[in-house]
Amino acid sequence: MIDWWQIFANALWAGLPAVGFAMIFNVPRSTLPFCAFGGAFTYGLRELLLNFCSIELGTFIAATAIGIIGVFWSRRYIMPRPIYTIASIIPMIPGKYAYEMMISLVTISANGVTDELLAKFIENGLYAVSILFAIALGLVLPSLHYTKRKQPIL
Image (cartoon, rainbow, N blue to C red):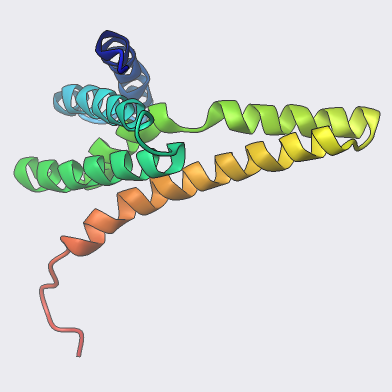
């Protein structure tokens, strides 16, 4: 059963790092509510999708959704698309998997290789890389599709 209240609460909290990241990179103040909404939306959508699919696919769908919304916002408010989208995907960065991968690597370095440590290292590394790839691909695809050329290629 889906815990809607927990997903909603986590999504609201995910808006804070999106705004913090946006403030670090000096985005205009008028875009901060959009960054907060984007961070909450992407994280909440991914958490909702985790009940139905893998974390990689859920991340890809959430990143694609904010990519489409970011293209719309950038055209409507005449701002660059990364102002909205980059801050919005920050809550989806796979920090847990990257951290556990590095802990496994340090343990392998200190104590030697065991099958269990090597398996944890590879598994967490593949999760981290595939989630990062899903984020990147999800952000790029909408902007490629909605790009209008002013002159023909030839």
